[in-house]
Length: 569
Image 1 (cartoon, rainbow, N blue to C red):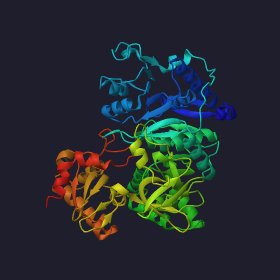
Image 2: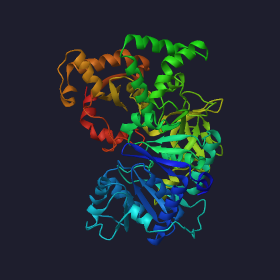
Image 3: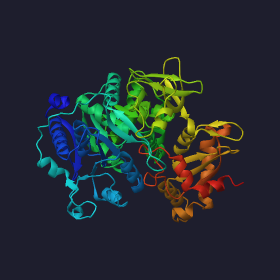
Image 4: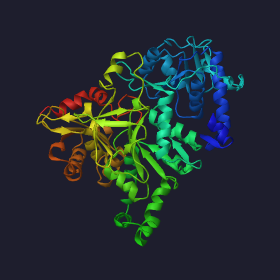
């Protein structure tokens, strides 16, 4: 609420409706949050009660989050891509008394299991007429706008909130097995905001474009808490599919993203360049210009400025987290005038542990440790963390909570890495994901997949080969590029389901592997066998995390037959 007093009528949030972006001031956001806190108290919300939020990014998400914490409640964010079964498990496990839902489609996910467990009230962000008489919802459902109109904003905080009280439970896995709820405190978040703000300066004139889900802790901290406490503005993208057009409309100055998005942007630039030999020659000439001399300025004016314009033209800072960024892609963006600051963290660390600085960064590293946080590398190369940002444990899971820390209280991240002489942290890979071939070679899948995904014909990939003689891959073709290739070569087009066995397509991908991909890999990393998939991995199927990382065990279950074939010889 201090930010509201300080920034008053300044725009805090922007949302798009009917092709127009509407502003919400800091003052209005504060009023809505306090009004919602009053409504929650009238509903009988007690300190520590859980309130679930199932919504895409929008202003109500923010007002609800702030209001719940003001009222002494604990926010349980739910990913909109979770299955009905996963949502059901989390509602049951968390014991959420109230759930906030944005749309009919998402409400249907809850109703699908025909059991609301402990839920006493449902707050719907859209119109509720169609749901008022639903047996499970009768007397339970309320409209968000109605609550704001029928309550005042004179909130009096009678709750004795303490810094180490849990303010949110973030579930790291809801698709298989028992969900693990990470308990994060007020101090976890605030310490992380203050530490990151010391090293990455956010200005009151900055505008963020928010598209990563607020239910993920990276976006919540870096794309929401930090900008609002700094007096910046946040515009909400319509969806990840609309990101390209939203970038041009909003013209953000800061973008919080994940490696997969930068990979797609990199690919799109090269695709455009390759449309004509002249464009390609000029572009390669521009990339070869070094320093900041006259030639570099010409290259920037003729080439790089136009690329930056496709991203809105005003980006001064981009941050990448959630997975490892390919070093070549980091260097590429820096060359065209966009520095991508790679960072590292986990849900359990609220999330930031290390990040590169604007004037102190290294490609391929995830930066230096943030102020107030300590890390050390164990004898087995695991990254261990201590600090005020480290979570207080897993909800209702004492065994997992104890197993997460070593005997000296260091949090075991499960990531392997090393610190160089300059204090930069480099992450090698996830301990559980390393592939050990039958020949005893260690292969880090993310690095190989990043190399595969840079190919213009590949939309996505996953490599396999644990305890096998060689490395193999599941490859999702970029079907638009495949269609273009078939047309240019007068080849008969068919559906993806039939094309995956087409000799012409299999030959094309074998050629790409032989000439473009395998030469960049060590001998033991090279792809010896592959299967093409008709569809991409998806969040809806539980195959991708909210930050677009692969859920490998789920993919292995879904494509078991294809994987068996890869190693059948």
